[in-house]
Length: 160
View: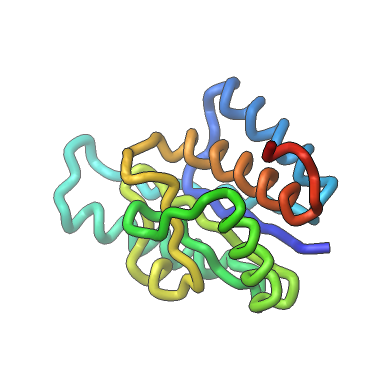
């Protein structure tokens, strides 16, 4: 059984995001061992400079890379990543699972995205869309797509 880890920057505060996440995490349990690691977002001033943002991203990136399970294939969720259909994600997840010895780690950054160091270490950079979404919503969307991808790979009917 594949082991999926989701590393996120920032904690879910809104109840509706918490409930949606919990539902997909429960569903994922039928297909994988699932772990979630929530890291704190580095503090920024109200109107941060570009340098302040870069410094915060660098610190978040170091925390992310320390949290990636040893040997896991890494997938960074970022706007400049590849856009895949759900069946393509299912195949990519299978490939990442082979590459990572059964372990795959997805990363969703905070409001300013991900550090370049995290993107550089990723086997796959994945984008949900060229549109901008709140990172908490992106987490829920990713959980749903991971569930869908695993269901597709198992020959299920959720995708239809």
